[in-house]
Image (cartoon, rainbow, N blue to C red; front, side, top):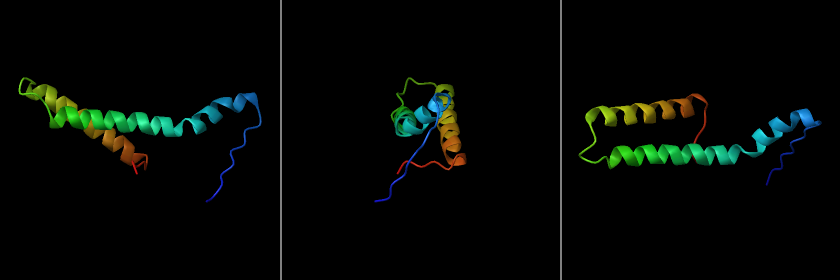
Length: 75
């Protein structure tokens, strides 16, 4: 197993440290949002308007594009 050492020299770099350590949490948040959108679209009630469904699809598509553009993957 490979080791990675993150080294931060000062208090001023503490924000970068927090960002580095919270990466997995952010991945989980985005994954949950992606799953939420897919479920809302897939199981949309008959009472949902076509306009509302199209907006959900646009948001889901935009999220997927942002993920892809940043070369991020849920694996």
